[in-house]
Amino acid sequence: MTRLYYEVVKDIPSYLDELDVSYLAATGHDLLGLAARTAGISRDEAVTRMRNITAAVVPVTSGKGVIPGFSKAVESILNHIGLTAFVTGKPDIAGIGEAFRKEAQIMFSADDQKFLAFNLHSRKVVDNYQVTASVFAQAMAAAAEMESGGLAGARVLVIGLGPVGSYAALELKRIGALVSVFDIDGLKTKSFVDSNDGIQAVSDLRLAAGEISYIYDATPAPEIIDDEMIQSSSVISCPGVPHGLTAAALVKIGPRFMHDVLPLGVAAMALQCI
Ligand code: 2YJ
Image (cartoon, rainbow, N blue to C red; front, side):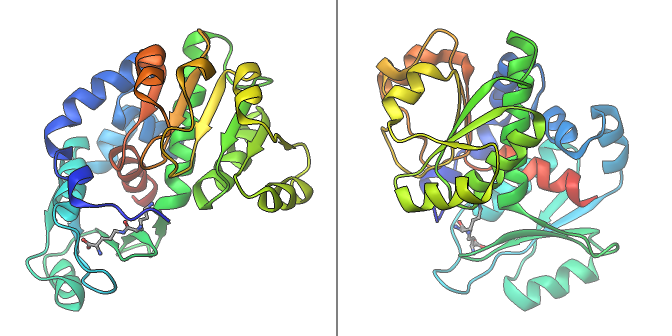
């Protein structure tokens, strides 16, 4: 499991507008639009639902401790999409107390294993892994709709069968894609395809990338996709941290690469939660 760190979260507040522009170019939707699509509502409906909703972000010191910049980044994403968000002054239990006292409607908190959003009224709990998997699948579907008829009947290659990749493979199948999967652990790949009808295993990543245009990169492995594996029709959706592209692959794919380390997942969590 990838633990985020200061260097990858510190600049998030300053590049959210830029991220909107690049998601718009790749998918026809900005961060809020993609999050709304994942929640099954329109962007306008999302704006209406977020009015007067306050979100508390509570830092957690347990395990490896607070990641400097993490809570601030979450706060900035929530404010960016239209909520009123704040980071509690104290972490842990005192912070949860502050969230309730200040009458936050939703609360975000992460330890080393889980990143959850809680609706303090309805008691809905939203898991970052599951929602991140979905929103990056929806980003890929939206990109496919811009290029052609969408993902129904299209081949998609999911790389990495951790919690995000496994969930994404099932979500992409539900959308109607023909899903192939690859994990560095061959036994994991076999057990996944054995228990999920209609999903195929691939054993050679390079060969598969040559045949399949839509790639969902859900691994923490760097530099596993080079420029020779990118075709003119390739579209890559990537919640993996760090992403798996070499510098030359990044140049070759250009705007058809959808990736960030937190914003899309957090925006989608918020809309699932309210
Ligand atoms: O409050 C803090 O600053 C820390 N306790 C945040 C910890 C963030 N957690 C992680 O990075 C874990 N790997 C879980 C992330 C799940 C997101 N996919």
